[in-house]
Image (cartoon, rainbow, N blue to C red; front, side):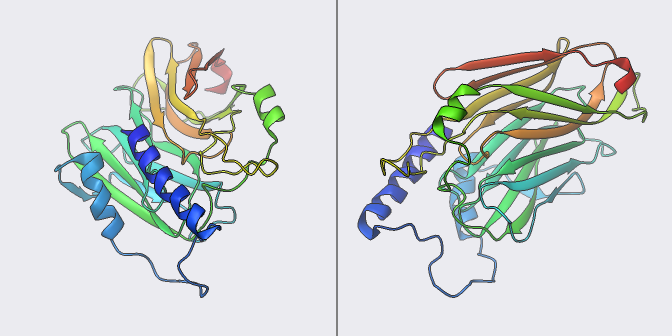
Length: 282
């Protein structure tokens, strides 16, 4: 589904560029300070969720994002999940309405992972709603959204040159932020864990400043984070995840079991790493 949506939206944008000769992020010179309507969302939600009803957040999920992004190619988005609710969140779909490929990522969580916080960085191509749709165990969908003023994020040039990006492709770093806060189970809560992956995550809409050709799409498509034999979370990603993907998440950790990360990109390259999590950090 991601690949089809990416190709369709990319073809439309490239055709427009060929006619106009420039990339126009907004329809007028004057700044539009108003939020867009729901026309885009209404046209795409059926492609993603079919005829399934989508309710409000219900206090289950919340989103934080800047009203005006400092850098449209690196827009921070924070999701928080209410574990006090009866229904566990088993998946979250992150959507940027006005992006060429609106589905930024689909995250799935392990049944006993206890994930309460997830943050990442997105590309935002035009003034847009960023939506997070949570699916609970009973199959119901709950949506929250934030309006972000940004433009040109999907076509913004990479911050690193191609040689540097390829030399460090797939390198990972994991940071653990300690906590003594106990969860409701026999596990111990890790306050925060940050995963960083070196990858250009090319959108397919960026132009090589030397050749003036478009750089082919090349991004992290799949990601799995596990501890021991249990799944913490997985991700199916698209072009809207920023360069050098960065994820922060809070979950119920088991002392003494290693964290393992496996990732794969659209060119079939696979990357993995493993880190011990010291008991002293939990």
